[in-house]
Image 1 (spheres, rainbow, N blue to C red):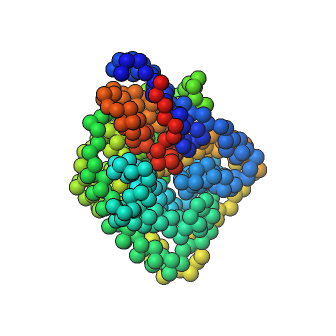
Image 2: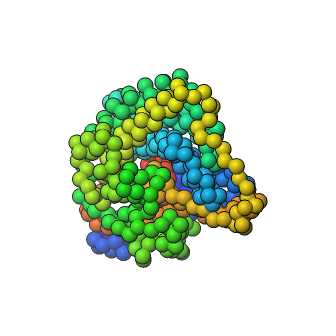
Image 3: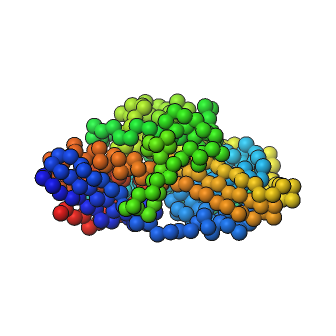
Length: 437
């Protein structure tokens, strides 16, 4: 190939605008840069001066796909600052709400973005004539995730029933019956999704090997546990101190490291850490899949997402059945009770933080609340920001294995690799305006 440059000039919706530039000398990659042309969004600044319970309304606007995760994480961080401990039932319903977001997000990524790449189509609708069963299943699973969020959160995007310490209402039994029926049917679709993505052969490639995920030793950790980064466990309150932000002159987004090295978050990292704690059907689906753990091949994240969908649906079924039993015993409209806040007793500003597992990996929110109940400081670290460095490193390491192919084939493989990270979600099926020079 001699000396050449591969440029993918636009990648849609990776926190603004992004492009990839790779310089090649002979068979070696001399430079690989993931340019993030991200405009400032000012969400952390917007939080300042707001009442403590307004973070739950602002945070979901960071991402329409991960709205439930941002909503719950913001609430939990505020609760940590105020010393509020919600009931176990509230925690379970919150987890089911987030897992509904997982089903929605994983279905969107797997079927609408990744699958057309593997079957040679530009988009999912182009597949409808030849693969109607895949297209129908995609829409059913996407609709199922939306339904979970709507029933538990009050609407499909930006939940409204969630609050500090409690939920404002409990779903009615009729709603639960319909949703449970859909979830039980969705379990079959999720298992079929595992079989589908296990049928595709992934390139023989091992990416960045250091991973990070929440672990609590008792569950497939989503809302609980402490972050474990490359085998080193840290307290949630110390998480930011364990992260080293890195400015790169070609990017307006910070890259991050821990201990001077990059780490990967997301479904494969979670699966490596917690796969023994999956629900029964999900463990069986994992065993039947071709995913062997631990695994560091980013292309296999699509299988991990499919297995997680089985787990999410199983967990949601269990939680909704428990809510139904409670509905029979009690006519109370709420799930949990609102707490009384005496900010004068806080003794000045209080800092609180929370880490949850969003669909793309660990999500960190931190807030400081003063004695009048207003937010004075805010810090948010998203999963995509943690994965930017590994994406860049993986492209650099993977590219030599495909350099002998036609140019469009090389570009296609790079796109598959980047897309496997599902970077806060690319809404275009293919990246645009690709240039060689």
